[in-house]
Image (cartoon, rainbow, N blue to C red; front, side, top):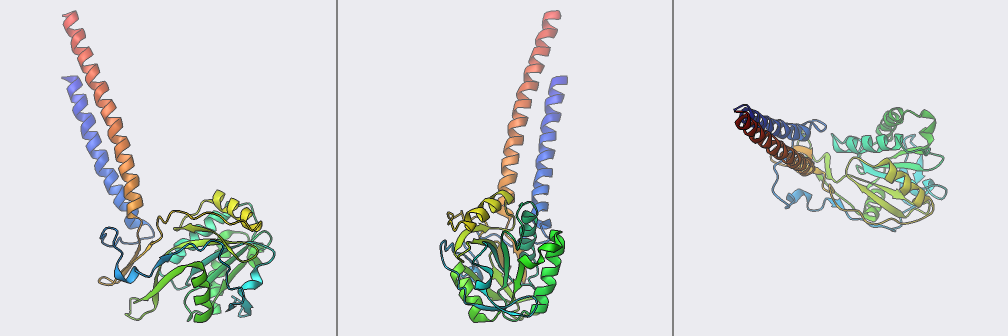
Length: 299
């Protein structure tokens, strides 16, 4: 009887762990940046996202003559940041309510562990896709991330740019960065549905590597920057999490579509837990049989 109570308790614990794991998985989705998950309709993208994504244009030359304004209000050309160093390029907008901050947080966190120095070994070029944004907004965003990076002496290597639609379109077209305007909370087209990616660019201004999503491997970034400094072009990466930005026009909510990744991890964990519980069940069953056999032999 003792062995069967142990077995029953083991399976009750397994059921409890499964429930807790399920709750944890859902918690990870809902708490990731305090976002709510939109309804999943399979592999079919919502109509508003049909033009959203990242097409990897490796070896594509960036429009170095495109004119922008930097975070000090100075007129610059994109080519001003190339010739000596490779660059990390990020296309965002500074008033983005969630995804762009996730992307820049991930970039900054990865760069903290890369033993290279912005401004000395590579440049960081952040371009707003919103033509209505200003150098003042760019300066505030730069100050925030330079402070977060923790190395104020590297500020000259961080470039937060704003520009007009022709220049923005030239860069996003070259990168293959698709995005569309969507309504903000006030109903006006003040926000953008877009994907999340950063690009590494060679010293010649050619696209060398894409990293998709909002978290980036410091090791991959280090190797990518070293290769880009030698004008080497990388390989395409899998389009997992290309469509990170989800927009629901019915609820006017935006969210990161990370559920499938989290759910996959949860399924793997559940499978591992199930396998462990199965082995424990077999062990307890064997112990129970051995115990009963011993009692009979001693009886």
